[in-house]
Length: 163
Image (cartoon, rainbow, N blue to C red; front, side):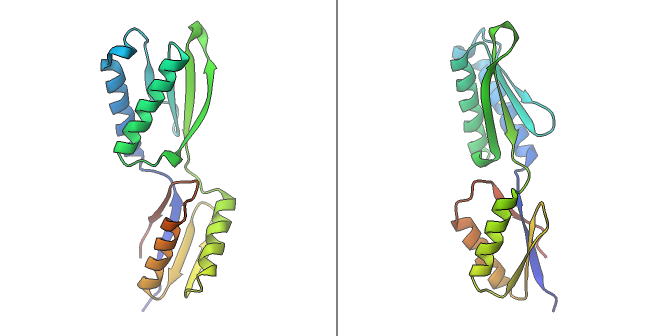
């Protein structure tokens, strides 16, 4: 029997993020407190979101609406790297939000070290952007997943590529 394996990655489902952005933009367009502020919530490139409005407090409120929609769509807020507020032309305020899509090397080392500390018969392999965990028993792999879920990491960890 061949070894079973799975990958540990960092990231979110982009379609769910897109749905959250669309829902937030629709809510901002319909809410009375955003009237005449010309508030924008939209994609900024491939891995970023732009939140822009007429004032700081409206920008923060729009960002809160975006976060609320992300939570409802089960998108981890750990995936959102919120930048600083900055003024742009016309006295408007913009916040750029980046999506965390890569596994930081220090987090990868920590996860590999934690897996090895369990003394289970599994082999973690750091592959740069993901960690592959292989083992003969699926029960051991499930224990590793439970252990990683129990630890609160600063990134949206997900499990993919089950074999």
